[in-house]
Structures are given as structure tokens and as C-alpha cells.
Length: 359
Image (cartoon, rainbow, N blue to C red; front, side, top):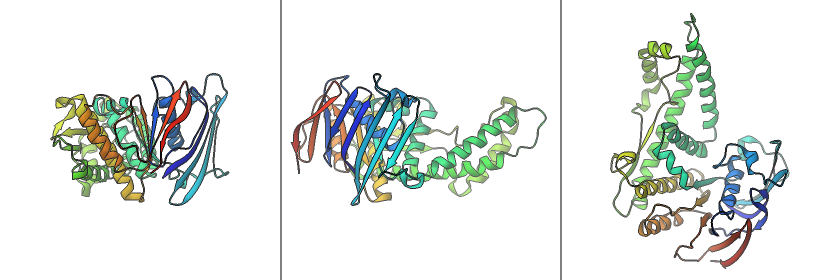
């Protein structure tokens, strides 16, 4: 999967941009606040229709304009697709795939992207909800039906919390549905974590400092998840009625990211945490490739922060050896083989290619 042509108009500070990316490595080079991350954000938005920097899509539109436009030519397995997206300040969005409105069933396979950005380290360090979001987004990336199950679960959860706050109503009709949807979510999470841990423990992803990475999830027995949930609901029934909230289920579960079996938030440096996150991204790439037979587009926004040069080079080379098309924002070009590499310089939202090596 790769983008062979990208046209952007009125996206943040990008008035107009026409580039033809390299099928392998693309460096987006420039000083701070020039628009490097805006190009990465454009690609990410085009794959999920949401930004990793803001919850309000209209913030993406250039302040001097009424709407933004994105056109992409995408190739995958000898199939070419033309994706066009427009968004105006009234939040009207128009999407066409090869000139037609795409069906939701197949749309999320047209352009897929995995992103690394510096602030994402907070997902590992902060509240459990951040870690749940990180894992759930990763599962949706592989299984598009996962979000439908989770949305059904959230609707049931909302209704049950209303029920728990009610007075005199003892007919808990929502519990069985929560157990049904919750068990599906938990099973998907368990299967995903098992796969990711298997990748993290391979020689290909092992750290140069012999650090062992792993992710731990709640202690569910995969063969009897429903029974475990039913028991937990029964034993916490009075407490839930007292507080008026559902205290059992995947919405409160947590994931612990560990190095050498130690929680990273207790024993690890910032560089070690970023190394683990980068290795997780590589495991995502391998998992996607295993499921679909090709790599998604990989996006790096300033990957070098908090990493020493040896750790950076070690991880960077491993990822590039196991990836498809890559976009990397940088203020300094790494000392790597420039084969199959194109460098785009950005100055105040204007992009120009100034070095190109075709392999």
C-alpha cells in the first residue's frame, strides 16, 4: 500500500501542495512551525477521518478559507484508487472513492496508516483510558467490526448506568447484554495482546540492550470470560447500586506496558519508554502484514526525541527494514542509506523536492 500522488488545499497552513511521494521513504524536512506535521496529519486524517491533534475537524481548515480539499492516488496489490475528501467550516464532509460514495464495509481498507508522534507517549504513562484507547484503536485497525461491537457495548453501558441511578427498579435487563458484548471485546483484546507480545519477543524486535518488552492485560480466562464477568457482576451488585455506576467490564480494564517485567511508569527512563512504543509500532506493522499480506503507510512525526543516537539508529533501521511506504518529519536528515529515499523541504507550508534517489 502506498500513496503515489497527494494534493492538499487549505489544510492548516498548507495553501496548496502537490507531491508525488517515494514508494519507500519520504523525509519531510524543515524548521519548526513550517508545516511538516500538517502533511503527516493530512494522511492520517485521510485514513480515519479524524486528527491525532484535535477533536474538532473544522480546526484543520485554513483560517483564511471556507473549506479544505485532499486528493490522493493510492496503489495496493496492483489496484489504483482515487480518494477525494472535502470539508467545510459548517462541518459538511464529502468523500468519494473513484468518483463514487464509498461503502463503509470496504472503505477502511483503501488507506491505512500507523502513526508515531511524540505526545503519544502519554498514552503509556497517564490514565488507563489512554492505554485502552491505544489498544482499542490498534484492534480496530485490524478488525473494522470491533468498533461496532464497542459502540453497542457503550450504548448498553449508558443505559445500565441510568438504571443503576434509578430508585425502585430491580430488573437489571442490561447486564446480560453487557456480558455478551463485553466478552467479545475482552476476547479480541486478549488475542491481540497475545499476538503483539509474540512479535515483541522475536529476535527481529529485540532491543540492542537486551530489554524484554511486554504488555499485560487483566487476568481473564479466555475460555470462560462470560462466567467470570457474571461472577464479578454478582459480587459487586450492591456496590454498583450504591455508586450508580457499572464497575465491571472492559471499560475499566487496564493494560500495563513492561520492560523486563517491570511497569514502565515505575522503573523506566523516557528513552526506554519511547523505545518500547516504537517497538509496539513495529509489532503493529508486522501484525497488519500477517493479516493482510501488505504493509500500511507508516507515519513518523519527530521520532528522535528522548532517544540516544545509538538507540535511535537501531530502532529506526529495524522499522525501515520491515515496512512499506514511510513518511518522516525531521529537522535533521539521519545518516542512513539514501537509496529509495525522497526528501521534501517545507517552508511556511510550501513543499519542494530537493533530493531524490530512486532505487
